[in-house]
Image (tube, rainbow, N blue to C red; front, side, top):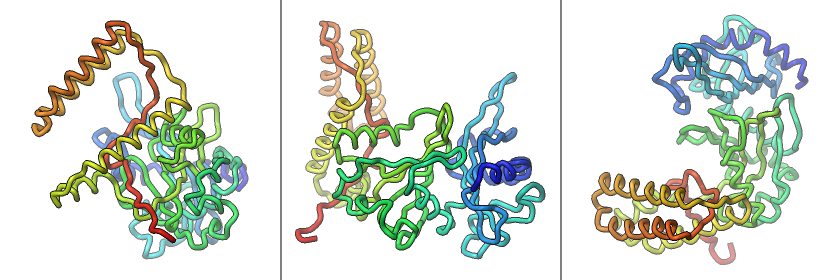
Amino acid sequence: MSEAASTRTSVGLLPSLAPLLHSWLPRQRWFAGKDQPVTGFSLVSATELLPVRGPGPGLLHLLVAVHRPASADELAHDCYQLLLGVRRTLPSHLAGALIGRPATGPLAGRTVYEGLHDPRLAELILERLRTPGVLGPLRFDRFDGIDRFSRYSEFSGFGTGPGMSGGGLTARPLDAEQSNSSLVYGDAYILKFFRRVQPGPNPDLELPLALARAGCTRVPAPVAWYESAGPQPYTLGVLQPYLRGSRDGWRLALEALAAGAPFTDEARALGRVTAEVHTALAAELPTAPLSHPQTERLAAGMIRRLGEAARAVPALLPYAPRLRVAFDAVAALGREGRAWRAQRVHGDLHLGQALYEAAPAAGA
């Protein structure tokens, strides 16, 4: 789709969509600030991925700034990524994805709906990720070192096999949506589609890329991703291999607890993996020296969080004194002149983020 076509579509687009977005956006689980009124919208970018005026379904990619009152003299706003399907009439199986029908503007008389719920449109994103390049304000890229991770059999054929045109890789959205949305393609790939986006590096892309370049296979390497093209790019989506049959650590721990079984071996394995990941991050990304006051503040923060955790979960109380001794030792060593270097860490590491993938059976 040419930039001229996207420009023609963007004229008058947002005013016609604003009444629909006012109603639809606050009902979405990933929409932040539900307790604050929306005072307006502004269009950051609009890209026609499929023509919205043609006979078939159209696909419109939007970055929209949502404005809310912040104080008496300024407005706060968040930027959201929207993928809008456009049809003359909506099939019954997509009724739940309906956003509304604009009364005016370039989409007047058409039906607008959540495009991620339409497999035909969602597969177009996968097809577009095959080839790096720029489409209007969007830039698509991929990881060239993907062959180093050949234990994921799908990696080696990415961008070359017939499945990349959508055949055999039907898209389906995951139900468990939080701050983002996720699409699974067949059982091969998962696309994390970021909803509330911010300019600058996104750890969901930056850290897995760093681990991939360091040769660490404990985190699935990004297969491809796309961003807004500009002086301050937004990371919009990251495609990674889908780990079939994996279970998260939280579920495994609950199952072990319910069965009265030990979780010790799994906890130790997770500790080893966590160490591998952070050792790789320290080798690949910059580190910085910690001053003695910083070390003491760090230890004081760990002690404070330990107290909060023990008060919230009394079962932790028997372990608190020994942990407190360890944290006090860190502070004392800092005062004596011991220096450490600070490094990047996985910023959202908990049992629900840790996946257990059973080893394949012999001969599989």
